[in-house]
Every structure is written in structure tokens, then in C-alpha cells.
Image (cartoon, rainbow over all chains, first blue to last red; front, side, top):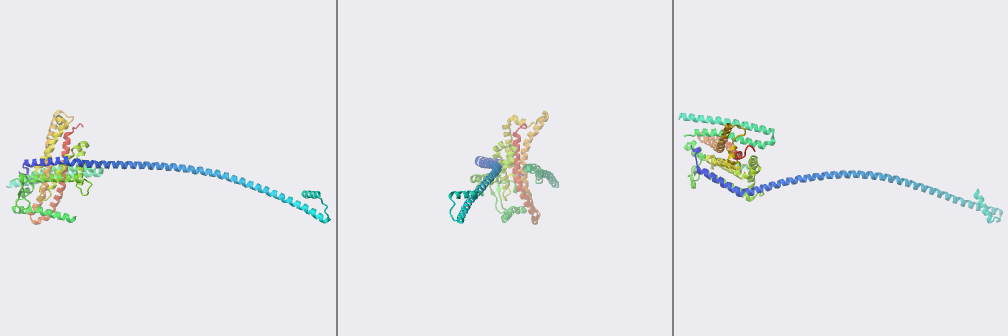
Length: 160
Length: 76
Length: 279
């Protein structure tokens, strides 16, 4: 039967072709090809590692940021609170001081007004005494009143 | 002459039966493999490789029947 | 692109059908069928042209084998020279195939360390068989793997490797001891070991027969559909042509699958023989 005819030449040629192909591929094609593939696989693996590391660091940074933010918030709250308290105290103090000053000013003004009134009253009395003396002189028509009497009149008016 | 023709006819029928058996086998394999893939899609690659392997093993048997039938049919 | 495909299809059918005009005249159907599948010392493409006798007593299948080897060598050397970074580089295809063989065949069966060592052998086996299988689908070319001598010598290589690697890894005594099943009494153990030993032979034979039968029967099916046109009626071409196209497309798939299966099975057989079951 032709279908199963033995052909040693063809078998030998198969081995020769396969052997030569294997030799050439093993010797000249595979070393550079596998090197390329290995390099690429390594690069990819490294990139993946890098990406993972970057992601991890990003996460860390994010966490740190969160923490710092939280701390800052707490600190800001504290500062705000403190400031508010300080402001309160300061305000109270200032108000107190202002009140005191205002009182002082009031007292001073009152004193001053009193002194002025006194002075005015005194001048008025003196003037009145003088006026009385002058009027008396005019009525009498002579200068009878000595300096001593004038003084006395003044005293009198003052006591009035 | 008539006897030879009869032998050839029987050989062809035998080849047909053999191929039908192979067809049943491959059908079973394909069905089960699809079942498995539907159940576990993540194992798709493994299942497909094994499916092709098994189908080839059975297909080989079917082809032996066909080849033997051919030998008989084309026998001078 | 579509026009391109149509053109190729047309040329394919034109060249595929021509030889059968001669067959119709001779009316020797089986002779014509086998003539187009089996080996011959002459190339005869067209009925009008006288057949060319090949030099050095080579046959067409030898020519196909050498052509396939040259194709692979040229392609892979070009791939290595060009590198994968250039556009349209053949390295893309070569590296894809290498990675396919490595990740889908060798490493799952053999493991990382041994797989890397044996990858060139199995890759060569795979690409050689694949190229020879697919070369046969080009009209006027022949399938060398459709010849039992070719497949048998490929399987014989695996058969020899089973013994060599098995004995190298386990030792001669260990190799035969590996055939014995664990934990059975001696008579049954001997029987099983005998069956296992026979199994090595049958596995190798079946390995060669499977590839041969697949390629041979596939091409025979295509040709049978085409021959029917001349045997029955020219109008029958409308029926048998679609079937022929279908079988042809199927043959592309079968060529790929058979190369894959051959490589995978030889890998498994070598691995089975060279690792003891206790490990």
C-alpha cells in the first residue's frame, strides 16, 4: 500500500531538517530572543514594583497630610480658643480701665468745676464788697473807709 | 468483484460508526468543558488547553477508523 | 482588504481545481486523490506542463521540509536582527509564539527551571510542525506531515528522548523502577510495568499516527469534495465548493491544533518518563 510506504530517505531528511533548524534556532535565535524577553519582563516587573511603591508612598503621604491637617485643625482650634479667652480678659480689663479713667475724669471735672465756682463766688463777693464800699462812699460823699474797713467789709460779705 | 465491493461498503460504514463515536466523545468533552468554564471562568485557560488535548486524543482514534477504512476502500 | 481576500480566494480555487481536469479525463479517482497527497519525485503543477524531476533524488515532501526550515530560519533571524521595537517587525510573531510555547506548553508541564532549559527544543518542534502543516494548505504545495515517514521520524525523536532523558534523570534502574506502581504485590506490579513499558511504544506510535491521520485525512476530505465535481456533474460544484472551503478553513485550525497537541504530548511523555512518581 502506497499510504504506508517506507521511505528512509524522507525520514533521514526530516531529521536533518529538524536537526539543522534546532541547531540554528538554539545557537543564533534563542539567546538574543530570550534575553530580549527576559529584559522586557524584568522591566515590566520593575515598573509594576515601582508603581506599587509609588502608590504606597502616595498613600503614606496622604495619611501624613491627613494627620498634619488634623493636628493643624486642633492647634488652630486651641489658638482660637486661647485668643478668644485672652481677648475676653483684655476686653474686661480695658473696659475696667476705661471706666476707671472715665470716673477719674468725671471726678476731676467735678472738682475743677467746684473750684471754679468757688473762685467765681469769691471774686463775686469781693466785687460785691467793693461795690458796697464804693456805694457807701458815694452816699456819704467822702472817703471814710480805710483800707482796714474795706477789709472788714469784705469779710462781712463773705460771711453773708 | 461483488464481494470486494461489499467489503468496501462495510469498511465505509465502519468508518462512519467510528467517527460517530469520536463525535460523541468530543461533544461530551466540549459540553463538560463549557460547563466548567461557566462555573469557573478564571480557570478558562487551563480548561481550554486540556479540552483541546482530550479532543485531539479522541479525534486520533476516530481518524484511525477512517484510515483503516481508507486502506480497505482503496485496496486494489 | 475585502477585495484582497476575494482575490486570494479566487486564485486559490483556480489553482486548486485545475489538476482535476486531467483526473476527469483519466477517470481514475483514487489514483488522482493519492497522487495529490502522497509523495513523488516529480513536480507537476499543471496538466499541460511536463513534470519536472527533482535533483539529488529529492521528493516533493523533502522540498517542503527544507522550505519550511529555511522559512523559519530566515524569519527568526530577521526577527532577531530587527528587534521587537521596530514597526512591522517579525519579532512580534516570533516572540508571541515563543511565549505561547513557554507559558502554555512547557512551563505548565515541566516547571519553571527545566522548562526554560527545554524550551528551544519544544519550540522548534512546534514551529516546524506548524509551518509544515500550514505550507500544505497553499495550492500546488504538499503536506509533508501527511506522510507517515515524516511524522514517524518526529515521533521517533520523542521516543528516543523519553529513554535518554528518563535514564539520565533517574538512572537505568530508576527508569525501569519508575514503571512499577507503588504498593502492589509483585505479580500485578510486573504486569502493570509491562503494560507501562508497552505504553511507551504505543504512545509514540499513536503520536505519529495522530498527526499523520489528521493532516492526511483533512487534505483527502478537501480533495474528495473537489473531485466530486468531476465525478458527478460540473453543477455539483455549487454544493461541494462551500464544503471544500469549510474543510479548508478547518484545516488551518487543525494544523495549528495538531502542532500544539504534538508538542504538548511529547512534552508530557518526556516529563512522565523522567520524573519518579514519589516526588
